[in-house]
Image (cartoon, rainbow, N blue to C red; front, side, top):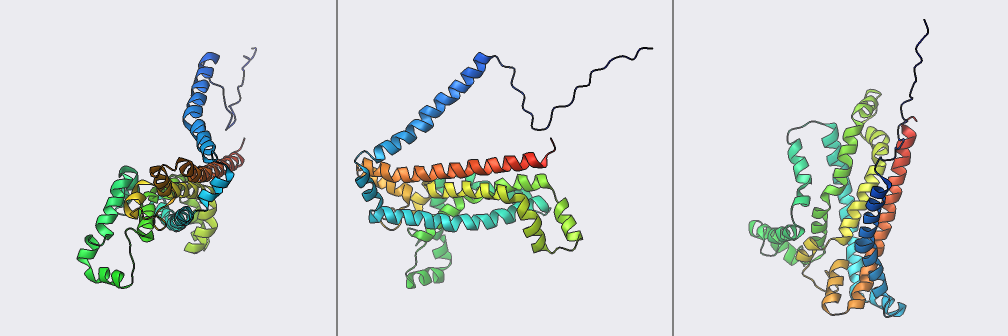
Length: 301
């Protein structure tokens, strides 16, 4: 009996990409549409910002950035981001670790609260902080001793740097936690449980097992959180009071220059914010590349 010849088709390797079956005209149309959209709504405005920023020469550009009000806005923006991002980093890691590794009552409520800044308008969030922490707000009414202590020590929350930091902290809460939660859930609990069985303490397990597994996701979340912190306008605008040289951040200073019809100055400061965005985009792409390379090396070909 003659054996029947069979053809064995090897399964495609993991990560092998197959070209789509759409006609070439359809692919060219989709690619062309995407490129035109990006050119009109992303590249062209960016080029326009930098062109207008140097419209009066490089001397005027650096003079605008060296203005005391502009320098104050730059320092306040970096200060707010420098405080809000590390605090959100601590909260994001703790919240993601608790949600992904443990079961406890109120877990779904915590997830909902983390997403709350996504569903609330930043302007409404800023108004809530004014109503709570303002001079005549809920905190001052319920705890007059605390309000008197702030007055006696010449401290302010609203219309000062602390209010801006609080508003920035609120709007950036979800970014790190939401980046880490699905990553930790996909990794499971087996490695941490194995480390504990082998005698590792909680901190040893965290630093030697959990952190190495989430480091690229954590860096990615920090980058996104920092970008939002530096570019936040709505909530910060409400709690800042728009005091030039004191409570204006970079976005608020841009608005102030534009309202004064100093268009070239506004574009000069805006170019700085755009440059920060480009640096953030570069870091984001680098982290995605490193993460993809790590994924390819871990999966057998």
